[in-house]
Structure formats: C-alpha cells, structure tokens
Length: 143
Image (cartoon, rainbow, N blue to C red; front, side, top):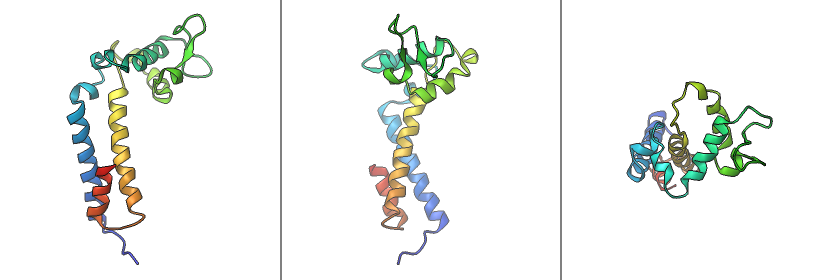
C-alpha cells in the first residue's frame, strides 16, 4: 500500500508544475498575451472573433439571458457563447466594464489559467496511481 505524500514534497511537486506551465506559456506567447491592456495580438488570425464577441457583449445592454450581444450580427443578434467569448468571463467582466479601459481583454490571463489548471489536473490524476512526488510532477508537466 502506498504511503501518504509528505506535505512539503506534495507542495514542491505542485510548485514545479505551476512554474513549468507558466514558463511554457510565456515561451509561446509572452507578456503581450497576458497583458490585459494589449489587444493587438487578438487582431491577427482567428482571435478577432473572440475579441469582437467580448466587445459587443461588453457594450451591449444588460439582457436576459446574460451574455447576449444584440448588435453583433444585427438585426438578429447573437450570444457571447457563439463567438467563443467565454460567456462566464464576459459577463463577470462586464460588471466592471465602466471602470475598465477601452482596450481590455481577459483572454490571455484566461488561457494562462487554463494551462496551469491542465498541469495541476495531470498531477492530481497521477496521484491516483502513485504517491511519488517526482513522478506526479513529471506527469503534470507532460499534460
């Protein structure tokens, strides 16, 4: 039977996975992606659809159901969900819309959070099979 992992080794494995995920994300996109005030990276490739969905949701009226963008695809309108604008984050950020700068995006921090969560879930899943902190950390880095 496996022995429980010591809390320090457990935290060290967690910290290694988080540090690796952040370093990997930064090597792919860098600070420009994480900076919420920089939307220039979203104007290239397929990212503009996400950005426009967020901007139309942000500037539209409050409606039920939440997350509607009635001015996008006028006259029918659409939803933040159909533009991949992460509806829960769009609605949560819309609450603070009046105090946010005009050029604001939450997609970079959201993507970094997703990368970290994927590594942590890989680490947690590997704990089902082994309590070795080094092995669980490597599994988290591979996810």
